[in-house]
Image (tube, rainbow, N blue to C red; front, side, top):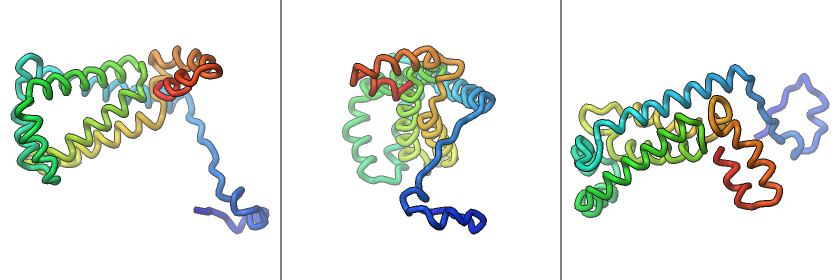
Length: 188
């Protein structure tokens, strides 16, 4: 997509490739601080949700998984829930609780925050698919959770008020010699 203004006559003479080149956006310290506070609150939200589904029984989780099987808008997902996940509920509960704990820790401490945000996005998408149209649920809740996860994954929110602030320069230095460090670097 090309955006040009008639006020910039030089733009008309530029090649198509140069005219469509994107420019980077730099966030101010204040914006990064606000994003870190958002990351902390989202991490707190995931942490708080651990307590109504504690192991080994995983309390109220069973009811919501049953609802997902009944009200999902994807029939194949209902089949997976009813024939694969519910019969193995202890494994599902364990995985769900551990995944939400990882999200909470990553976001609260700002350690591998992009990884935590990606995991939060996946968990939120699963909730959206399963519960968005269940009675008594507000589908925008799950949509907003997905968007929060995407936002926190897109911008390295852990680099302010988080361990990622300390890890990022070290991984940048290590990435000069290590492919693994280059991959891991993206998650901070």
